[in-house]
Length: 251
Ligand SMILES: NC(=O)c1ccc[n+]([C@@H]2O[C@H](COP(=O)([O-])OP(=O)(O)OC[C@H]3O[C@@H](n4cnc5c(N)ncnc54)[C@H](OP(=O)(O)O)[C@@H]3O)[C@@H](O)[C@H]2O)c1
Image 1 (cartoon, helix red, strand yellow):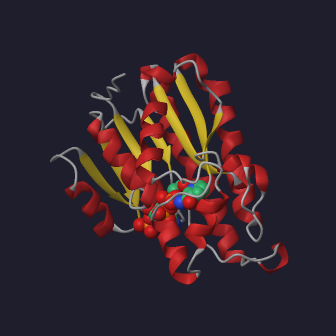
Image 2: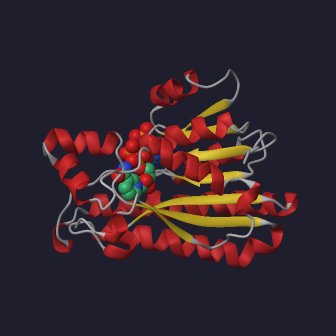
Image 3: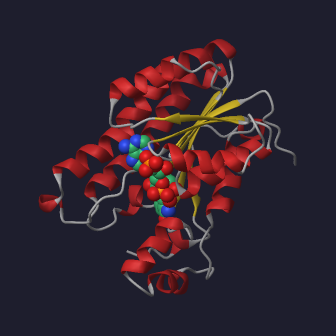
């Protein structure tokens, strides 16, 4: 099976992060032009250095800033065929009553409002072209509600709902919207956690029924498939991309 995304342009939020970065590289390998969105321009530049010349456009944006996002979307000089939403702020775990209001605001703004803003701007153009793909990167938290992360859990559940609404309302324009529900990923976030809590990676591997965790590269390949023509019969779906950890929840 060959995934051909030449002639397609993908907007990837969180493109400087573990999964967004690998997604951008995977989509570029399939021929897409990628617009990389995140705050840290230097990190976006590092991603672009790994890809062929002129295959990526850097779009530094703080998704907490609605005006900045609106300007960036209005300044795009390419039609966007594909949206992949990977951006997610980090936060301090705590019980609901003790969660920081600031963290809660950031989760909702980056996880839901910015995506709604992006869709409102770009879906009409996809309708005209009668083709589009939207992939939201969610988490097992949407279903299992991880402790100390009520805001994150709510946002991930809302993202799955958003994909279903897009599928329902835009499916007739050959626009597919789906959600990938991830468990722990063997990437930079876990490496960071390992520094604070040594041994946590091994604990997760031990609890995983398959004794493996997906890597960002593996997740990116699944995302590329969800951006392809092959996904046409799958719309409004949520897929567990967990290497089986959803069968043995870790929290
Ligand atoms: N890694 C896992 O184990 C795991 C598990 C389940 C679900 N997920 C989901 O998978 C997705 C990708 O995760 P990841 O592991 O790649 O995370 P990551 O490495 O921490 O990357 C997060 C990305 O979000 C961007 N971001 C954060 N706040 C932003 C803001 N205000 N404006 C614009 N961009 C912002 C960051 O870029 P800047 O800092 O440059 O802005 C970064 O590119 C997330 O939705 C996450 O919830 C991950």
